[in-house]
Image 1 (cartoon, rainbow, N blue to C red):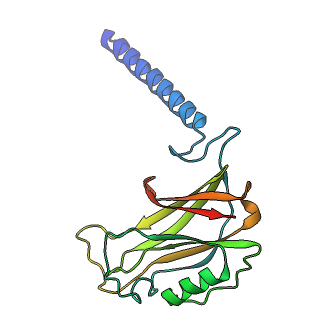
Image 2 (tube, rainbow, N blue to C red; image 1 turned 135 degrees about the vertical axis):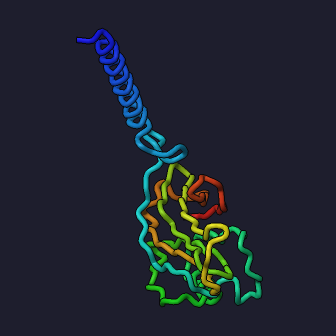
Image 3 (cartoon, helix red, strand yellow; image 1 turned 45 degrees about the vertical axis):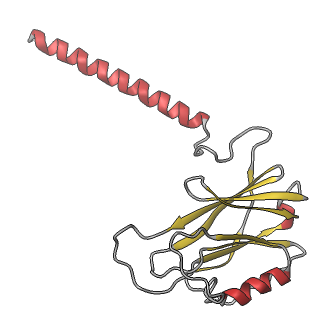
Length: 197
């Protein structure tokens, strides 16, 4: 047996023990955080809870923003809306010309949360409402905003991505005056709207 091999074996063993300890601390840290990204709802008595939503309409072709003669602005923030009655929804429909008919919404029991990206001059854009959470009088609406990579080849087509979801009014407890905060996937505030539920 070579004297050097014992030293090498000890070094390998020491490395494996350290790697195992590091992995243990990493797993413990993730478990303590609940697996949530920073800023997402966590545990505790005041923790936010997820509100169930159902897609009413989603697509990339509407005329939202174009009918008003607004020029396409590639860096404009999306329009974020909480719609609580049929008149507000009719106004949005008249400004949008969605590519599909919207289903019926019973506003005595539901509300609509809408995100309209607005006019874009190329393909490669999309928007999704990924999660809705409520913690007390604050509602967090998480969005995924997709845009083409700089310098990428994209179809030269006019688009105006949108996503509309419905939620039961009874899902918001407590009700009353709620602050809806819309955040992108990087936790940047896109919009805020106070709504009476």
